[in-house]
Image 1 (tube, helix red, strand yellow):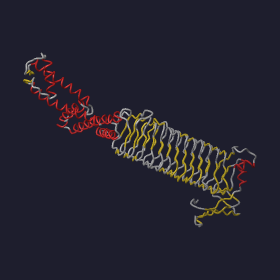
Image 2 (tube, helix red, strand yellow):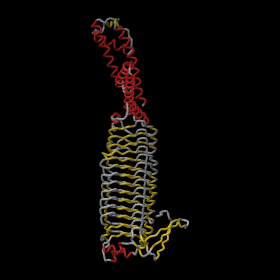
Image 3 (cartoon, rainbow, N blue to C red):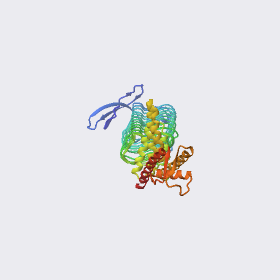
Image 4 (cartoon, helix red, strand yellow):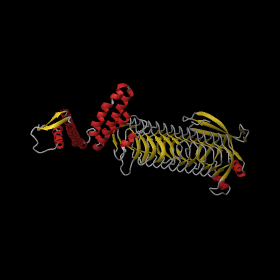
Length: 582
């Protein structure tokens, strides 16, 4: 049956209608379909059944088969009034089928509070050409419920409070015009619930407080042009949830406090238009949520307070569009924003995560990870390949940056070194100079380890010779002065070297290898030990009074100490000035 028509005309004739399965009607309805120019584009014949005849079939409990029939003003509310029943009394309907049927009503086609028997219930290919379609409070037995390929021209449909038995609920390839689509408070059984490839157009699409139980939920390639899409308080069981390539249009998308159960949730390649996206308080027991290559437009993206400690969530290559993105106080097993362009403020102050992956991102605004009013527990932080053009708000100590980068399993030493460099430059630009020093130390350490590893891999002489410069760097640059970030440590090293050389002079004199001699006698009655330390001091600090001079092998040691003294005092000056100037 054609669906792309703008208007239609019904001509009921007193001609017997014979269906393909042998059912007959005394009259035939010819429906002509017209485009927006008033041109007829198709026509179809239906059996024109009298509504009172349908009510009689329901009252007598016979099978209700309406396939290929034209039904005018069907209303179970009218049926109840006629039969003196209460407004919410369930009406049993046995073995119902209305495939390729044509429903028309001035106000609504009313199936409210129906009680369908077990077995398949099908509206496959039917048209609700005029008036609302109401199924509120209906109960469906065990079996498939099929509304695939249906057309709802009024756009207002209600399934509020329906209960479904085990079986599939199929709403695939349907077309629903602008209006309110109400699926609130439904209890689905264990089976597939599919709205795949359905066109909902504009209006409100409501799944508030709906229970989906175990079974696949398929919203794949569904198209919504605008309005509101509301799933908040809904509950999913152990099921696969598919929103892949769904087009949400310029809708406000609301998944607040949804319980996603323990299945796999797929929003890959979904298109979100210019509207708020809200997942605040959503939870799941385990599984994965994927937004890979999704596209978002204007409006805020709220992923706050999500409780998914055992769930991996991925936004790899997602385009977040304009508007802030917030994951404030959320808990995940892992969260990935790999290869995203983060052009606006992103709040990543997570309550807890084993892994935060922001590798290969391009950051043009602010990423906020720094704890404020609660601890941020991120065990592993991956920033490899990041282009940081904006700012990263992070605290070296409270965010445990050193451990968070070292805990990475998928990166090499060079990549870890580069991440510490990124942090070092970021801390410098944000004025956190103590944190800058910590990051710089780790950057230089991992750079040295990486260089040594690369030399080791070359083999040959380089494998052994590389230990010499690496050892020198480890001792002089790292241990003595923490790469010129700690003047206090350099000063302590100065004292250690002075004391060390003093002992060397003393033991050399005891062993007869060399000695220190006073050119002016010994007016102060200094012992050999004190004279050794005095000579060490005037040599190390290059004072050069000349009152005590070396002999023998002590001359060589004095030359070495003089060089070391000049070097260490320069090292101290650099470290001290670096601290003062900042």
